[in-house]
Length: 183
Image 1 (cartoon, one colour):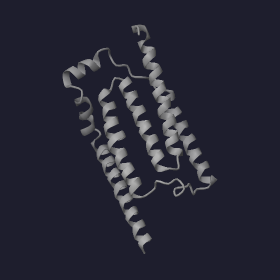
Image 2 (tube, rainbow, N blue to C red; image 1 turned 120 degrees about the horizontal axis):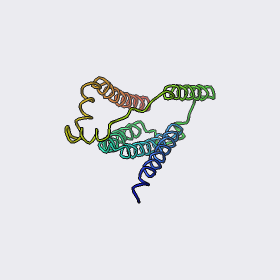
Image 3 (spheres, rainbow, N blue to C red; image 1 turned 90 degrees about the vertical axis):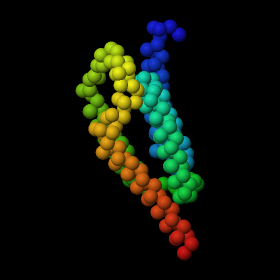
Image 4 (cartoon, rainbow, N blue to C red; image 1 turned 90 degrees about the horizontal axis):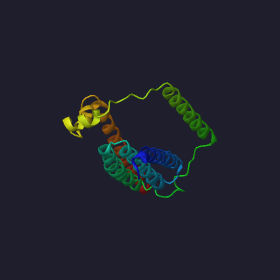
C-alpha cells in the first residue's frame, strides 16, 4: 500500500466499522432473545473498539474490548442466565402497536436533535504533533486517567452505582421468581 492511499484506507474502514456498529446496535435493540441481543451488543462494542484504534486511541480501544465487551457482557449474560431469560418465546414483546409508534417517534426526535446539534459543529483543529508531544511528556494513560478521576469523577461513580443497582435488581427479580414458583 502506498502512502497516498493511507487516508482512503482509514476513511473506508472508519465508515465500515461505523456502519457495522449502527447495524449491530439496531439488531441489538430489535432482538427478542436477550442472549442474541447481548451478542449483538458485543459486536457493537468490537466495532467501536476498531473505530477507536483507527482514531489512534489504542488504549481506549483496548479498554473498550476488555471492560465492555469482556467484563460487562459477562455480567449481563450472568444476569440473563440468573433470570432464566434464554427462550425468546418467554420474553415475547407484550407491548402493542402504540408503544412501537411511541418508540419510533422518540427515535426520530433524537435523530432530529442530533442533526440540529451537529449541523453547526466545527471540528476543532489540533496542532500537528500535539498528541505525540503530550504522549511523550505525560505517557499514554495520564491524559485519559486525569480527566476521568478529576472532571468526570461524579459521572464515573454514578455509572458504577447504576450498574450495581441493575445487578442487585436482577438478583431480587430472580429471587422473587423462585419464591413465587415455589409457593
